[in-house]
Image (cartoon, rainbow, N blue to C red; front, side):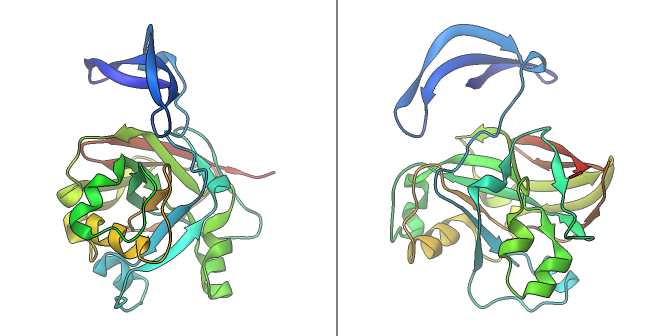
Length: 247
């Protein structure tokens, strides 16, 4: 496991650690490496669940022809859908319309239930970048979202977890093959991070390592095999993945 410790942009230095920051803590090994010389895995593999939030930006709901929900619209993605930076997004043969959805993701740091919004920060370990990959045609066909959002590789996370961040007004941008596709801010969320933690924890227990994908802004669209998609959240970093065929 590695932790970012310094260096200049483009020449970052990471330190090797042992342990698990969400469970028993970590210890430095004393070894340091250039970020360019290591492979980053997903910064968290949820042992329990990824909770997604749908239609949490009014403009995104509108672009898909949907009304804004009266309450947060939540769904689950399996932990088997999680991959890390530069891992391939595998295009399933069952779909012909797979979309990117760039998002801010919240990593839960302690077991919790019925968390008041004012105390949401007490249970958040940090924040990372997510791509809530969605088979749009299957989402429409099934009438519910489990299959459309649950394929293996449909939840890229990374490049790391930022533990000191105000999530209220972060820029979210997505590029496809270097071309801008999404450009918005978390300040336009219909339900901000504290409200989402309070709402979700009102009916399910959240565990250390659980991830809340907070919804995507407008500008979603299709990807095809060979495409490269990058999601950037200010204050965190950029998550890049390439799309490949399954076969």
